[in-house]
Length: 346
Image 1 (cartoon, rainbow, N blue to C red):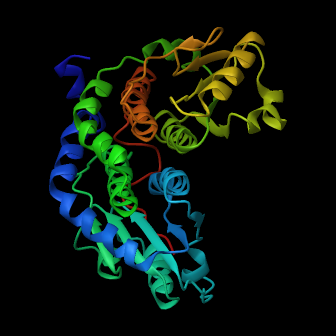
Image 2: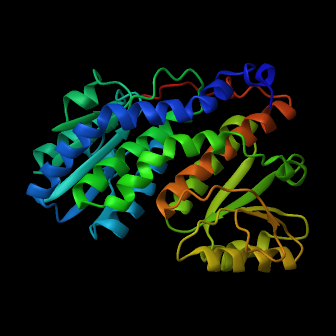
Image 3: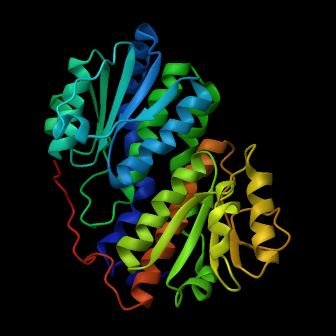
C-alpha cells in the first residue's frame, strides 16, 4: 500500500503505528515489568483470573495460553456481571487477577476488579489510560503506551495489551528467551505491517461468512480476527479450534466456503496444517499461514524466532488486510455500524 492509501483511515494509520507503539512500550516499561514480575514471584499466585471484554478479552485469551504454557498456572475468565449485576462475592485468595481494558472506564470491568481485590487477589490492570478508574482500583497498573487510538476497531491497543502481559510474564518466570524475543519484536512488526494477504480477498469478499481457525495463542488471534470481520466488514466470521471445527461445524464447510487457518511454528502447527489441507481437499477455499501446507493456499507469516511472538505478529498483516477489505466493500472501517470507541457496560 502506498502512503496515500495509508492516510485514508484512522485504522490504517494506527496499524502502521504498531511497531512504534510496541517499541515505546518495550523501552518505557522494562523496569516496571521487572518490578511486577518480582511481586508475582513473591506472591507466587496459584492461579490467574482475567477480566475483559471484546478485543481486550482476546488479549486475555492469548495471555491465558502464554501463562499456562510458561508459568504453569491455570487461567480462567471471570464474567464481569458476577460483580456488577449479581454482586456475588468471590474467594480469590492466592490468585492473580488480570484486568484488561484500553479505556479502563467500563463500570463492569472496574466493579469486577474491585470485587477481586476484596476477594483477596493480587490485582493487575493493563490499560491505555494510566489515569483511568481501572488503574486506580488495581494493585498494579500498566500503561500500555499505545498512544491515542481514534479508530473504533482496536489495533495497536490489542497488540500492546498482549505485549505488556508478555513482558510481565517473562519477568515473572525469568524467561530469557521470551525476553529476547520481545526485544526483537518491534522491528519485526515493521516487517509484518507490509505483508500482503490480499490473495485472501477473492475468496471472502462476496461470501456471507467464514471460519477462522487456530490453536493455542493463535486461537486467541482467530477470535480477534473474527471480531474485526464483523466490526469493519459487516461480515460474519466464526473462530474455532482447528480440532473442534472437525466436529459439528465442518458440516457447514462446503465447496468454496472460506477458511483462514492461523498456524504458528509451535507444537500445534502440524495439526492446524493437516486440518487446513483436509478442508481444502474437500473443496473449501482455505488459506493458511504455514509453508507446510500441501493443499491450502499459503499466506506469508513472519518467523520471529519464538512461537509466542510468531502468534502475536499474525494479527498485524490481518489488520491491514481487513481494513483494505472493508474499503473494497464500500465501507468505512472508522465508522462501523452501531459501534462506538468506548463501550461502558454494567
